[in-house]
Length: 201
Image (tube, rainbow, N blue to C red; front, side, top):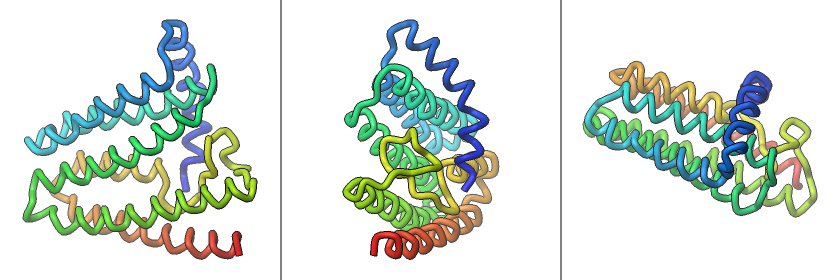
């Protein structure tokens, strides 16, 4: 829901970072892989309940996720790079939730499972529509620069990052926050399924 506004705010800073990295010969795929590997630091950080460290890894990962796209558009986009970006994003998102389950299995276990369940809905509805949109030659007016059709929803990348930050800042409130976020994700799934079906019918 907020991605379109976040993109407008971050577009110029990310472009400047991309230009700097490009001047050193850094590629978009290198940024994608590096930020992903750094982001996986959330798992040990959360396991040992070092929530400040987890937040640091989260921020670095998300910055890298923005820079790699800007760098790809600055040089050249590739299907392989787009594929890598999407897959690693989903793995990273799930690793954050897993990390909180590892930190407090009894308290966070069920909320984490419910949240991952809701992620399956948002992820599959997003990717399934992108496949059908590609077949029909449908392009996104809101996100024309994206490699695939980005189906909008109540919870997008910006909302996801916001909740992840809240998880790190208020780890004791993870169960409540996870249930709230899961509910919003399920609403997103329902609207995407209904809207996507009607659009493709």
